[in-house]
Length: 180
Image 1 (cartoon, helix red, strand yellow):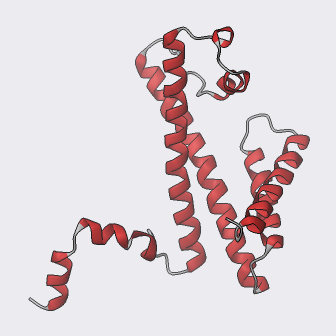
Image 2 (cartoon, rainbow, N blue to C red; image 1 turned 90 degrees about the vertical axis):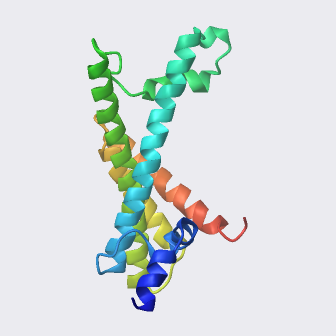
């Protein structure tokens, strides 16, 4: 046995986890593609957890019989509109199928946002030679508009609002990066 085989055999889980963020998940041969894929996968996972957690929360609240008059803040009751639709099927199989479908859609949206934003900021940094608030604003606007287009009933006004919001949030995050 050579030393490289014995080194691989003695690596612990802690060693693997400590190098996780350093090496990346993928190696497609180009840093832009690697960055987009890694951002997509990580954010899609977070989106899935968020969607399932939200549904579990509202299912638990409904099970306790709490309604808006019972003390639930209006901003929380308003988010019930964003629940996974179709979960009250005739059978538990239909409910699970609806949950998987809707969780997949939300995961895709989260992954799309992260992958697109990450790829755009990286590409603009490489093209312009600098990473500044302008890159963030453009990437945020394009990402916001794209996310608006994933909605079932997106209007021109919603697309513009999402583009403006995306630009504002990403620009603020870029400008505030050094403060926190």
